Amino acid sequence: MTSRRTFIINGSLATAAVLAVPSFAFTMKKKEIGLQLYTLREELPKDIKGTLEKVSSAGFTTVETYGFSIRDQFWGLTPAQFKEILDINHLKAVSGHYGVGSFLADGETTELKAAIAAARTLKSDYLTIPWVDPPFRKNSDDYKKIAGRLNEAGKMCRDAGLKLAYHNHDFEFENHNGVTGYEILLKDTDKDLVYFEMDLYWVVYAGKDALQLFRENPGRFTMWHVKDMDKFKPALNTEVGSGSIDFKPIFNEAEQAGMKYFFVEQENNFAPDSFDSIKKSCDFILNSLTLK
Image (tube, rainbow, N blue to C red; front, top):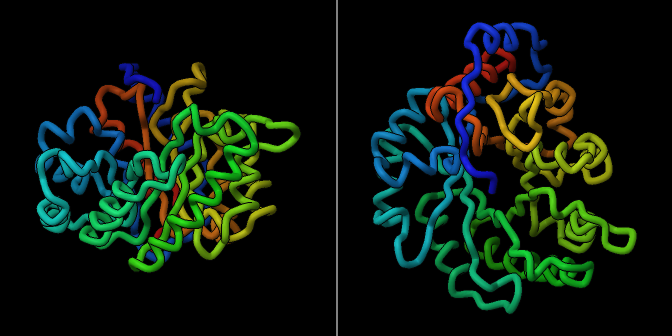
């Protein structure tokens, strides 16, 4: 992950940028704007209650969790205790990023089972695998193996009343003898067992076209990370609506993609701090989407 940096953006310019961007044609059924809590990874472990209060106050209604472990649970709180705080703040954890240990490499299920139990306690819809360690994604055979493991995990999640999703970075788009890892994952996973959470920033960063992926794989991208790219430093994020990604045509194809939920995420380059950044992103979406 890119390390957090501070980058001050002139407030008037940011406001002008929001006003200059045309409204999205995509219409949501409910006012559900999600936040990937990794955005607040510096603040959340220090003050879970206060941080989630600010998330709710900023206008978010759903969240995607991160950070669960068998030993520490959610920063010292059990999933049940964590859910209580979410409920108090009218937030629903519809998805969570969970580490599954060595499962993708050797099929060991201890951590996957613990993740499933935590996601069930939070009453989440999705358990999302966020990352594959470099030693396990060197070539096309590795990706075929990962696809098989995802199918296995998808069955376990389905049996537990959950859905399994896979979240991308840019490394999945590297070419392996004429095929990318992402193409293998899409082709070799069962569409009824494995869903995809498209990180729009990483797709753009990798030089790929989200709309083409939607056309070629309709209905598979049930969740998105809405993360903008800094106009001058593409390796950095910025507040949604302040960067270089044109979200309008992407949101126009939400139905084709199969999108059910989306989560704002910003990993760095906060202006002036992470709480202010998530509020700016939420406000932009509220002002630029037709919400019902």
